[in-house]
Image (tube, rainbow, N blue to C red; front, top):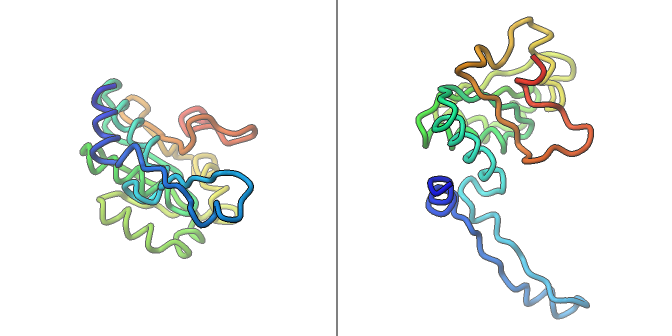
Length: 168
């Protein structure tokens, strides 16, 4: 827990500051504040969950490879950043249409040493990378003794896809 707190403080940039929204408050009926998530490393809230999961899977579970699915690439960039920091092999699956649309994020992931694999099934969009294991017959996260499949939300919303290792 101490190592995670240290990473969140020194690497991710937590806690991010809260700024009083002076101009908004001149016309709003209530006081407004802005949470400055743009100041976190990789510029979004997605840094928190992957860094915690990567630390857990490496230090406590002894796994050596992390796998992620991403649509726009934000979760992939955050996972790739955590993997690079901790020296973990990282593979990110992304729909081929999304890869074309989100070239800057694909570039960032590859720059961090992550292998980005395009998924060419169904609509080739972010909702379909999870169908790859059944479509090709090869699981994304195998063998499960050395691989960890990360997810972007701490608690999935109702109807969300299950993490990869629960679908195999």
